Amino acid sequence: MSEIYDIGYRHYDGPRLGRGYATRALALHSLRGVFGLGRPARSKIMPFSLATIMLIPAIVNIALMALIQRSEIAYSAYAVIMQAVVAVFLAAQAPTVVAPDLRYRVLPLYLSRPVAIVEYVGAKVAAMTASLFLLVAVPLTLMYAGELVIDLPGPPATGEYAGAMTMTLVLALLLSSFGLALASFTPRRGLGVASVITVYLLSFAAVPVVYGTLASTGNEAQAAWAWLMNPFWLVDSVQSWVFGTPPHSIEGDYPNGPASAVILVVLICVGLGALALRYRKAASR
Amino acid sequence: MNTVVAGITYRALLGRRRIILLLVLPLGLIALAVLLRLFGETGQRSAMLLMDNFAINTMLPLLGLIAGTGVIAPEIDDGTIIHLLSKPISRPAIVRTKFLVAASLLAVFGAVPTYVAAWLLVSNEDSIATGFAFGALLAGIAYAAVFLLLGVLTRHAVAIGVIYALVWETVVGGFVPGARRFSIQQWAKSIADQISDSAFLKADVTLGFAVPALLIVTVAAVFWAGRRLRSFSLTGDE
Image (cartoon, rainbow over the protein chains, first blue to last red):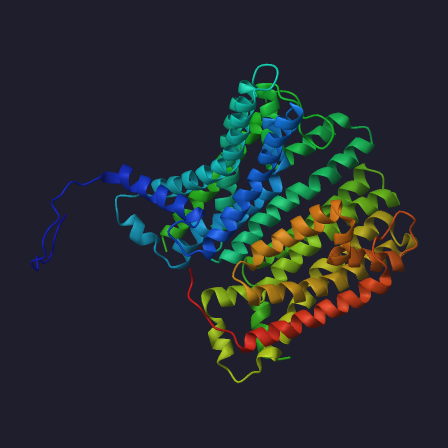
């Protein structure tokens, strides 16, 4: 620390907590911001109502397990079934993580501290990933606890539950890297929401059309690749390859083998790379 | 109608990179139509699948959302609307101008690509292309009005609009037949059904309900948005 003028203010000589602490603090602050904690009530409405909607099928399934002694929703299918809600959550909340800092041009203030761009972006991605993970993992865990308490005939599906939790983390990372990259291209929240949901719906609505086109001409093997265009089915195909769960596509199988896992890893890298490039540019202004 | 306000609004929506957002969906629709034409069957059934699943169910509400809220919500969001509101222009006139801008954008980016995509698949058979283009045009105008109103009413206009388009029109409309009567998409389909003679197209709502409903919703939404803007109070961000 160099001073040009020492005008007599007291110096700080307490402990310096360092970059790790600053990054963790930023991540926690962003995570709280995603759920509107520490903000007025009207910014809590959207995240908490979507999180409640996510819980409803789990609760219904627990009730069904108690009544008919059978689970109707597989752990591995939860994210695919609820994909519209997860996507709306991502679209509605990703801009709240990145847009205000860009809009009010406060990035240089962050970067004048020990936090570098890598740590700033890492903290934001970690916060969004954690929030998406919580959104899906809480209903899954609730359902698993319900299954243990009700004690269904046969052994509990612990392996499938663990696999679903792992893949939820991967899905959350994929969605948040892409969602934040798209949202960070505009400092305006409304446009950020619209661009994230546009890309998601494009991938969601195009898939059945492409699949139907290729399958109707007898190209079943090629048609299977169409499912990989949507993030939820892409992660589900990796899940079905790694953990041997049945595919949860609308119809037909996924392509066999590790290709979908490779695509998944490449996409995550592309998302994170785009985010890093965007912030390198934003920080230099 | 105020040409200066219209010019500013056009620039706000089409300037810089924002036009990409409006172009992505129509280009996706035309790309899918080309794909169907090259690799799939080009019959009326696949044209219906594309028009129904993609053009009317996905593209139209999203474009309506982007254009309808885009003409006013960003200005409210960053507070620059105050410059517009402090000018001696009547507030309902501001709303009418912005509505016309949004409606014209929906005609260009929604109805025209719908016509092109349908024409690529079935040319002019049974007036399918004309029917869907006309339905998309009228429904696009109604969406522009509704989402403009939503943009004036709330700051979460885009998220609420997405939930309406995704949850109400697609999921609830899919399971509860009664909800289809109150869905702009279904009104678009009944207009398409009226114009086209195709046997594959089947509308759930009668034309006698759809046309008055479209008219009433459009006029009422624009009128209410104008009223709302008259007593608009600019509150701070969260």
